[in-house]
Length: 226
Image 1 (cartoon, rainbow, N blue to C red):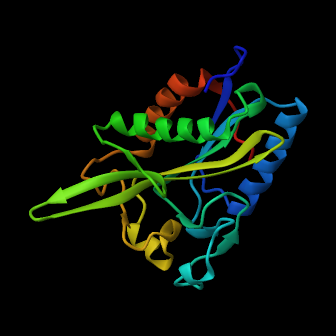
Image 2 (cartoon, rainbow, N blue to C red):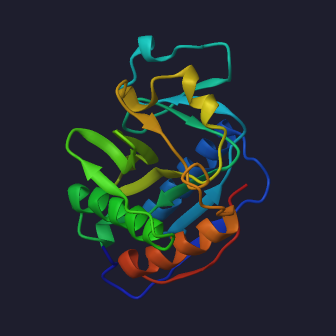
């Protein structure tokens, strides 16, 4: 889903944990500036301290442990999700007015981005009807299951996207037990390290950057908004 011109996308990485309210405020400001034509597109990679967010479709009953971590209401699509150390969050601020104005194609491109990045580690990411995000099939002696490895939740305003994706690299998977992740009670969550792959955040970032360029176009270094 490339732009109709040759502009590069800014690529910023925050090295310190970013509080969720500060991240949302920075995203909204950047998205508004993109819509006004006063700022360029941006992919912002970061980690949050442990927290839960509730998307617009969240059900109160899916918050199992409301006092465990801070809980924030979010304007993104989807239900409850967890963010925390070891999980790479990529906030995606792209101008869809210059990328075809096709929301379904945009979400499909985000899915393809994650799947291609996972392939760099020989992980087969898959999609499932009725389940948002990217999944991996796991098998053992006499058992099999599907676990979620990456989540997608975006919002559009004036055809500019914000919020984005999260990829589980090495988070504490026990932290997901305080919610029903994305409303899925029959499936679990996993990470690259949980799959037996000693992948670092830097390595995950490199895979995400390479895959993004294939699908959305070239990137260039940029400063993080906060």
